[in-house]
Length: 238
Image (cartoon, rainbow, N blue to C red; front, side):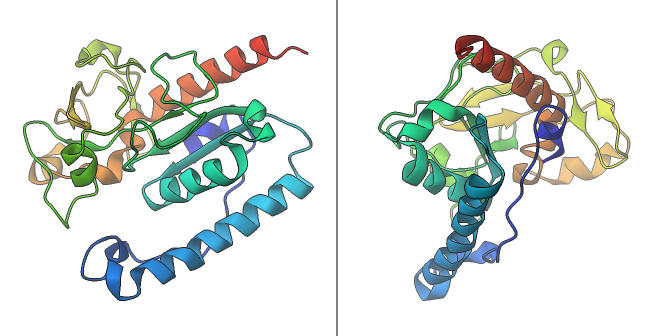
């Protein structure tokens, strides 16, 4: 959540997160779905509490990753899609999720860095590798060619230059710009092996970059959030 903290107040729901394996068979059909409903019920109660006690008519950014993005999608459907509250939606960063192009009625993918009122999504994976069924979160998005936005250029540009990368946030709490380049491929984001970071050897052994969907583009997200907020405020001065 730190990627959004410099431009907005951050409210994070305290909820009973469902176990990772609940998203894959045979666990999904054997207790996974009811467990997921419990998790979402907690998130929904937290969002209701936020609206009733903290929002005060302010614009809203919905941000999540993986399971959090799944809950964020449902929040959008229940509270924003074809609802009056959509007017308050700056953007939804629903990262690391499987989102169809027609997932919502009135909320569309955003393919412009200054666009507001829609959502962005990507699933990161090591360049030239393919995700595995029932193992990698990127699999369904890749297989179904679902929504993917370039988190460096914020459009559908198929490739981006390493010089355009604003920066990844590493475990040493430093930001490393110009470290990666990306390529959009069939509902998935291929990411190059990061450069100019310490101890990069361990990343050579990893193909699934799901864990880094946000950190790899931390500074890109932070700056884009500021851009979208300014765009929203400019268009809604009344």
